[in-house]
Amino acid sequence: MTPQDFYQALEQADIILSDKQKEQFDTYFKLLIEWNEKINLTAITDQKEVYLKHFYDSIAPILQGYLQNKPIKLLDIGAGAGFPSLPMKIIYPEIDVTIIDSLNKRINFLNLLADELGLGGVHFYHGRAEDFGQDKNFRASFDVVTARAVARMQVLSELTIPFLKVGGRLIALKAAAADQEIADAQNALALLFSKVIENRNYQLPNGDGRHMTIVEKKKETPNKYPRKAGMPNKKPL
Image 1 (tube, rainbow, N blue to C red):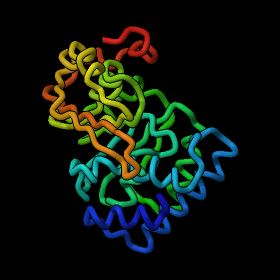
Image 2 (tube, one colour):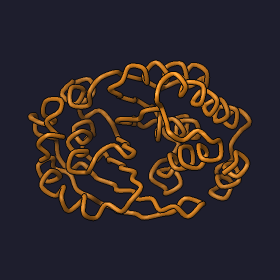
Image 3 (cartoon, rainbow, N blue to C red):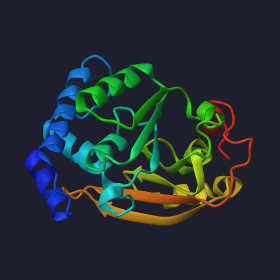
Image 4 (tube, rainbow, N blue to C red):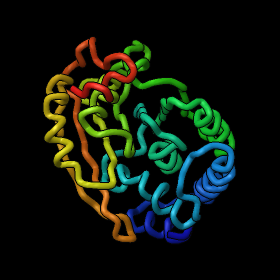
């Protein structure tokens, strides 16, 4: 997918990028490649592959109709080089984006990237989701949490649901269908008072399959969740 292919695919979804937005994606690509030589941000470095498998793939929640250009608070867990939240932020600048990542080198990259792209309403924090999930400044504060290929739903739910307001939604993006994951996560979802409201399979323009799971928070999360850092992985709910 060349940059031009990317723009045309968005036009087919009635998203017309300005020259500034196109420049932001171009700068994003260049900085990603430049910084990837210093720290491991991505195994995908070919321009066509980045535009398809990072930029286009990241905006699936917009293309599938789950996000609008409104001042909602969105948290991206384990975003790495800013995926999926920052490509969505470029397209829908009204969204307020927070990223939590456990590697400070990636946070340094994201801060520089946001400055170079001229992005406002973005906040980057170094640390573990389990710790921030118990912080009253973050807990139950977000309308949407996104996670792209972070963890199995049984683990992911505990890392993300505590951050949501009641009625807020987790958007989990994965490369493969998650039916078995969701079956395995039923106990965790019940303990966290949340429910899967939609599963959707879709394809990238090259035919690669993708999967999106939407989970809605129904009631306040019990105070004991998330447990201490490392516990969700060691002993999933």
